[in-house]
Length: 119
Length: 80
Length: 277
Image (cartoon, rainbow over all chains, first blue to last red; front, side, top):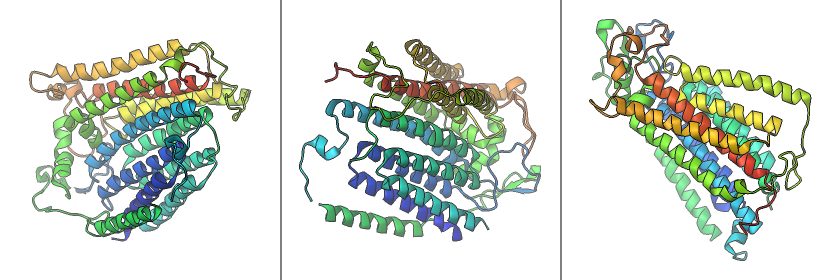
């Protein structure tokens, strides 16, 4: 019960990522915020499949007890592929940002849209 | 016992995430994100997920930092 | 406008906080564990939370002959999903090469050590190059170990491939290689396609039963070696087609991620492209 701090961390990371996505203007900073949001969701999935006093789902050289408790393997398998895909999409977003800079000589989203300051 | 580890690591995670958003110097922000990934790797290891920990250490801490640095080098370093 | 955003964020925060109060506590059991009685004939019981995950934990070692249940979920039970992920990676690498097409065709390559914006100075140090070469060999060996032993210890195609790709990034950054970039990218893209092709070919090898059927796990010799249920020491030649699929994915991930880094690094050395303006 006391380990609810992991869920709270997930909420904080998600909120940090969304706030930065909304309020930051630099394109590279936006990609960084997207990465933080992605990491928060990964952490949420792993902490959903966690069991206290359990062991990793690997039988090699496991202790020979009569009762074995293991953490859930499916969230780990999903997040494992998601990390690689997240890196690939990050690289794609950075490529588009670099081409935007080469064409417009700025990374500011408001300058790119051609609007003045508004609040 | 495990609770204190989780608490300390969670505080470190939130602080490094806030720092990587806060810095105006993009290189500092990306180094801060690298530290964030490294701390997250330790957390995955404590959560009994060694497979995910290895993937996060290889990709989050090494490769993501590398391509971000290359992207900054192709654009500009300061966030205006 | 800004006020509206703040209100929306506060509402989202509230919803999330109410949501986690209704989830099960971290690290505690949920579900009906009396349905899942384990395998009492082997004298081993696995306590249960989720029906699907406990099915994997209880039968994964029997059905796929693999000690690492995560690897058996990734490559056997959800093998079609993994094929989709590998295809996504392939498409992303192709589109990055397509984005920087005009950059890479350009002849005006400056040295990678001389930055276009004048921000990162070139470092020429014998200590850095020698140390990073030793580190390169060690990281590459560790990645190969992870790929090969994916079914008996933590590791597998995705992890080993990403570790090896980080070795490539280390080599690029420390040596600032600029020559033979075109040839390198051609070789890398060839091997990346080969990895995906091997994966699909292994999937079609068991097509008489179904796509991605683990046909080697039922031969009771060689790769289908019968292993005892429960903790054991693990065998390198076991687990059916899981090591072969892991090897294919490892090749694909290594060359794909390396190709991303090499392409971006190559494009960052191009001084100017007037074809894009």
